[in-house]
Picture (tube, chains in turn cyan, green):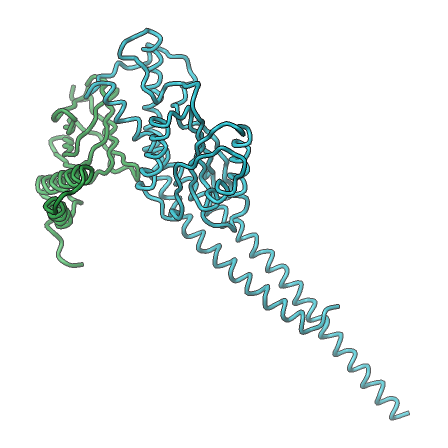
Length: 299
Length: 145
């Protein structure tokens, strides 16, 4: 059994760890509440935009099928066979948030491994993701954009920056597709890893139904309007992903720190019990010795 | 016709700025102002920086938007703006300062072409906000506090 002094040292250090993890949990909780409201406020915009784009995509398909001249496909809808694929991964800047970063990095690595030997482009959000991409050896990956230190204060300018890099890669570098991997904020206790295609804009699942589609008027012309609208749609989506990832990270950290605090508490209690037992054993031993000594003297 | 009304929703990437029924909406469309009443054809419009006027039972509300899009469909008007502010909420003082700042940087020599465009956009935004805040009889410039 450990000595009393050792046990007291352990109690002290466990206690200070517990205090740290508890403080981190509180900070994460407060920040998470804030970014949760930010997402809830931002979702209507993204959802409405997505619905609009779905309709435009349907319209695009219908006109392409009809061989209409104005239906000439906008590059964002075009399915390309050649060109490097691109990955955008949303990780965090800091650790101590459970499996949050590990999940993103693992799934990104899988994506990259499947394309080993081919040239790929990559954009990394968060320090963890950037470091992972820089550590890669034997992959033909070109990093076109890094966004580090943006959490927990994401705003639309960050989405602008990343969005511009992504669109540049697609338009100027001829990227054939852009995949995003991020954590979605499902609830406080749950984050969901999402891997989806940002560009080209995915074809709507339902068959184009000409009757249900409104005949839109466009001002300015359809092509100009699309070229102004679609980049903004992409940026709005990226903005939502940044917010989702931010809230998910904070939620993950909160849970991880909560678990850590609980563990520390349990451990500390076990040590305290041990220490008390040791102390009591020593006292009992001393009394026994005293009694033994007195009896010997009296005898 | 009086029973048919528009549903107007003004959304920005950060929040739903405003949402209410209306009788008439005037948008700062790309090629000039555009009025929308119930029964309008489905339309997709690019918005310039400017003023949105919403008339609801004779009452007019003014908003300043800084570019974006509007979708008109089935008597629903969805405005996707980068920023949107109600006239009453515009801080005229700040808009004024922004305008001054933009003017000053425009006067400095040899700004790059990109900067020039940005400065112009900033000026346009500030001017729009000032105009809208005056139109809406917005709050007077705040002093202190």
